[in-house]
Length: 433
Image (cartoon, rainbow, N blue to C red):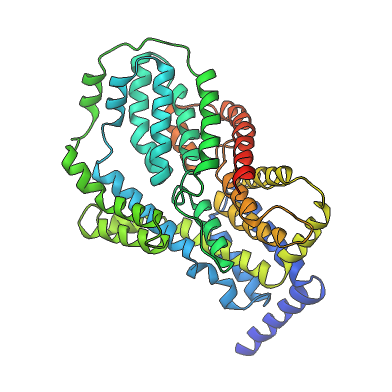
C-alpha cells in the first residue's frame, strides 16, 4: 500500500506539476477552481480551500510549511478574536436602546435613515458588521413601521453602511487586518488602528450624500416611539453597567490604537477577558468564532503563500508592471480598488484581500511602477470592503432577510455607490499615501 501511494504521488507530481503543466500554471488553475467553486455557492468555502491546498500538496508544488502557513498567520487569530469580541459586545446588551435614543432626536425619515446608518457604520468600525446590524435592524423595522414606509427604505442603506463602516478602522473588517499583516511581513510594522480612516470616511461621506438624495420622501413620523420601542427591547443596562461592559474591548482598542499592543495580542486578550468574566459563555464563543470562515481564510492565505513561493505572483507582477508603465498613479490606485471590489463581490472579501494584496506588493516592487506599496495596499483594502453590488456579503444577506429589499435594487444602488465611494476613497489614498 505504501509503495502504491508513493507511485501515485509521483505520477500526480509528474503529470500535474511537471510535464503537462508547470507548477505555476497548475497553481493558478487550482486558485481559479477554488474561486469559481466559492462563487458558485454550491460548496462550502472552507472545504474548497482545503481541497486546493490538498491538490497543491499532492503534486508537491510547495512544501507543507508553505501550504499550511495560513494557519499560523496573525490575521487569522485576529479575525477570530474580533468575532468573539463582537459577539460578546452584542450579548452584553451594552448597545441596546440605540434606536430609541435616535428616534427621540430625529423626526424626518431621511434624518432617521442617515442617523441610523451613521450609528451602524460607527458600530461596524469596532465590531463585526453583522453584529452591528443585529443591533440596529430591529430599530429600523420599528422606525419604518411608525413612518409607514417600506422597511427596505432603512434596510438597504443600513446594509451598505455596515459594510462601509468596516473600512474605517483596522479591526472593522477582515481585509484591513489581512492588508496590515502584509505590510508587516515586509519587515516593517502593520498599519495602525486608524490608518484606514481617511479613505474610509471619504467613502462613507460619499455614500451618505446618495442616501440623503435618494432616501424615502416621507417627512413626518407617526406614533409614540417610546411606547413601541420599550415594549420590544430587553432590559437596557444603566450607564455605569454599560461602561463596565465596554471596558475590556475599549482597553484593547486603545492599546492597539496607541501601539502599546499588536492587534493579534490585544484583541485575543480582550476576547479571553470577556469570556473570562462571563459576558459570553465559552461554548458560544467557539460557535461565534465561525471556524468555517477561519479555515477558509487560512486556506486562502496558504494558497497565496504558495503562489508567492513558486514565483507565480512575481511572474504575473512582472507582466502587469510592463503594461502599467507610464500609467498615472491615481488610475493605478483606481484599478486595484475596483478589481479588488469585483473579486469581493463575486467571491469573498478575504480572498480579494489575499490575492490582490500579494499582487500589490509584487507590483510595487517593480522599477516601472512609481506608486508606493502602501497606496496599493490601501486601495486593495478599500476595494475588498466594497461588496456592495451582489448580495453575497453576510451583512447584506441579513438585512435583505429582515427588510425584504430586492437584489436588483441593491445592485443598481450598489453599483452607483461603488463608483462614487470608490472614487472618493481612491482620491483620499492618492493624496495621503
